[in-house]
Length: 203
Image (cartoon, rainbow, N blue to C red; front, side):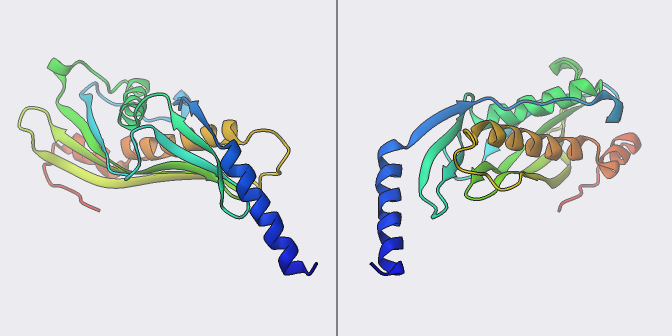
């Protein structure tokens, strides 16, 4: 048997095994605050809706694939992505002393989830990309909007070394947290809030 025919047989076998053994695993993403590294602020915020614009289903987070790209395990969140992102912002604001009640809020954070996923083909990888709006709660005017992202990657996954799903969950959590922290700690955003400027920054 020549090398091409051998590789074709191995690839075909992998496809059969993968299609027969594909599973779905649910995970919960978390936000792990680091109080010594965050910038405190005034309690002026509540969190609003974050629309899922990823093109994925409401719970779809990632895929574990074989080296030839065949999916063998799907990773879903336990809560909808919209709720996951909103909760991450709520935790981040609370950690900084910036979260308040609806009746006292000067600003509302809303936005769009442009990308939020994890995957492993060779390297486990997590990525988040969010468009975040700061809305004047009383007027409904968007006073600031910008896109923020975060990404994390681990060394190459070795088949047989255990399930990669826990690592994927952590990578997706940390990528999302990076995007959230970059939003709330953005020096330009903080300066706008301090000055009371209504000029919108769009990127």
